[in-house]
Image 1: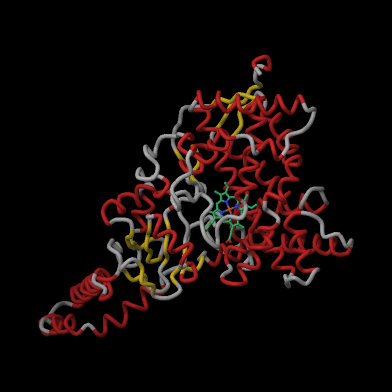
Image 2: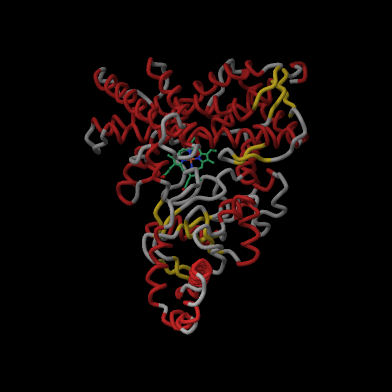
Length: 506
Ligand code: HEM
């Protein structure tokens, strides 16, 4: 899933101490000057000893005995590693500079962890698919606690496979095709609120993606608990992206409180559905059904964690991608015209048939679909994912020690000119032919790949259908940067002025 702050490196302190004591060569070289050292004034003596200790730590850090078999790269300074550089440099150039220097596999030390960074499709496939059992998903404990430790992302092996099947069942095309009309209703309510005003695209897309996520979690139909869930979730989200400081008044403490209340609300909802003997729709219905039919034994907290997990995974991601779609279409006028034409064709058929937008319509939007594919590649909002080696792993001639993090860089692969010529150019036509295997993975690959990819694409298509046939939009201001929060999005969330289209033109 979608965030990147990690545990402190127990391994660093554990591996430094015994080596300091057993490195006899270093100890001997320190014994000769020891007599003369005793003649120094105490403060100076302490300074010399402290500097020597630092030097020793530094030498040890840079010349680990297993270093030769570790991938190339710099571990930076003791303890802080290259974290400062990671924060001060643009995250993408931090990786690309090192990739140029060391190749497709290199080591570094960031955010408190020794890491191996990989950016070749073959290596990514090994970590995420063929030897996935050796690389477990890894998240900071505070994040895991907030989403719920029993959510899909954190599971492994047979238990993960069983849970994934249940979650995936409610997100397959056969399950979501019935939700087109509900998604369309959300769009038709949302878009008029943008008319003739300046909106922050990211905020609006979050509203939209959240409402769609609620449908996928609970099915259609509003109930009393929904409003409460919405408010509590917003509080949870604020805390998720804050420092994990469990002190009175901090966003983290408030979020943990909201998480507890969310659990209670969800339990009430589960109880209500059970009492009425209607398991209802959405993921909740699927999970309750599994329990009722004794196919598997999901506890209430397991159900709650997975509902929160899916809402979490579904909404910021899709909202960020949609924000980029609007930016790219705005900046590429001819492309926007072509997309409008495609959507007008669909609209004509809908008007002629006196009907609503259907799932089949969304299967006949090839250009709009390629725009979405190219946006997912260019923006690569999930630049990379995290895994952790569960044992010492031999990998392409190197050793990845147990406990080290492994980061497959989706973004580097998506921006490699060997696979995507002129990678910085926004060019949906490149997807007229399928990309080479394992070079395009905006939804991940392997056992933990995204179960919500079809829903995400569907909701983007439905929104683009109505937006392009009814409105025009213009970016306000000429700031052309990127902000991270937590995903990369256009500066200030892309403020837009939205106006109705001249209907005669359709
Ligand atoms: C454009 C929007 C989205 C993008 C770019 C995206 C991307 C991803 C990626 C790359 C992963 C794999 C992470 C890894 O391997 O560590 C993932 C996992 C996941 N996504 Fe999405 N996602 C999106 C939307 C959604 C939606 C709409 C849902 C649900 C309705 C969803 C639910 C999940 C879940 C539950 C997982 C965890 C799967 C597992 O651990 O087995 N995502 N997503």
